[in-house]
Image 1 (cartoon, helix red, strand yellow):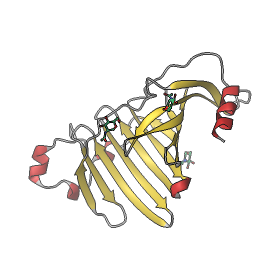
Image 2 (cartoon, rainbow, N blue to C red; image 1 turned 90 degrees about the vertical axis):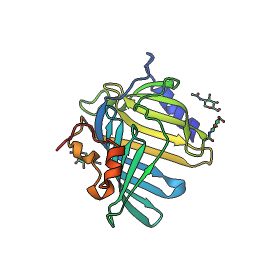
Image 3 (cartoon, rainbow, N blue to C red; image 1 turned 45 degrees about the vertical axis):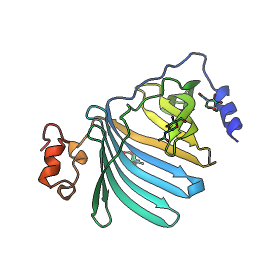
Length: 211
Ligand SMILES: *[C@@H]1O[C@H](CO)[C@@H](O)[C@H](O)[C@H]1NC(C)=O
Ligand SMILES: *[C@@H]1O[C@H](CO)[C@@H](O)[C@H](O)[C@H]1NC(C)=O
Ligand SMILES: *[C@@H]1O[C@H](CO)[C@@H](O)[C@H](O)[C@H]1NC(C)=O
């Protein structure tokens, strides 16, 4: 199945060699992720801000028959993540140890060329993308192969398919991307998550106040 997929891609490849690129510094997208083996689906709203090294995802996850709604705000500079359970309002805050990396095509990715999603011969029915494969480290310190597509113009993510050694496949799609952060307050966790003074002195999370 996989080799069939790659064959299909290869047959539409155009001759020139795309270069890895980095996405714009701030954008927002609707995301959809699916892992059939885990019977898991995620739909969400992602805000990405490489200037302040923070992300926010408002997500609805369904694993089997269990559904959860979370608002997850991650500050890579302070190494802090806030997880707000949107069903009961509970907020948890924890530290983590993952460095920031810009949203980008990895410099060691292999180009599988370019192609139009849809059609280049019908007006407004085509999107020119670049296609990449490579290996990435996933949680549990395993290496997984991926195939990604990015828009040729502006280097926006379109999809990321990750083939894990366990045999599970994780699909991710990005839609309706808008540049910039429409409402910077999405990065401010509810007051109850951070209202003790000691915490505020220790962490200066929000940069210049936004409100
Ligand atoms: C990814 O790893 C596999 C197995 O180690 C290797 O065969 C393949 O060439 C690697 N692909 C890339 C793009 O580095
Ligand atoms: C992950 O694997 C690499 C290479 O095998 C190893 O050097 C590193 O210590 C491992 N990290 C963790 C957190 O297990
Ligand atoms: C994408 O944008 C269109 C047009 O604004 C909207 O109708 C649609 O619901 C959006 N899709 C998602 C997945 O957010």
